[in-house]
Length: 157
Image (cartoon, rainbow, N blue to C red; front, side, top):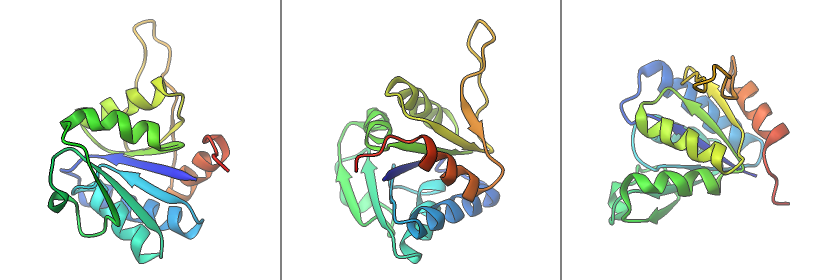
């Protein structure tokens, strides 16, 4: 299963620790991690996954593989800026959102457009204009977030 980890490049230490643990959990369970490939939440998640023996894909916004963090195993160069967020959301079978700002919000929106479930750790909680809750499932731990992804993600096996 490919699990996306999305979150801010300007992450807090707590968000980075959550991302690191999510990355480790993804790898321990034999899944592949996909993310935006840069710093903050993305770097921490990739570090956790690689240290646990897992595989990482970074969908990069620019035209140079050197912008990838050192824990990205497979950098994908897009040259399309924030539009790469749609590729991240569609590549993942489920996603974990950790913290984040507007880039993360766009990834969440693309995930829902693509029919992908999103687990949340200290991230956006949204409602529609009609007051209906947007189904970002708030999780209390990295393990719970990965459990949710495994249960509700689209499997390709």
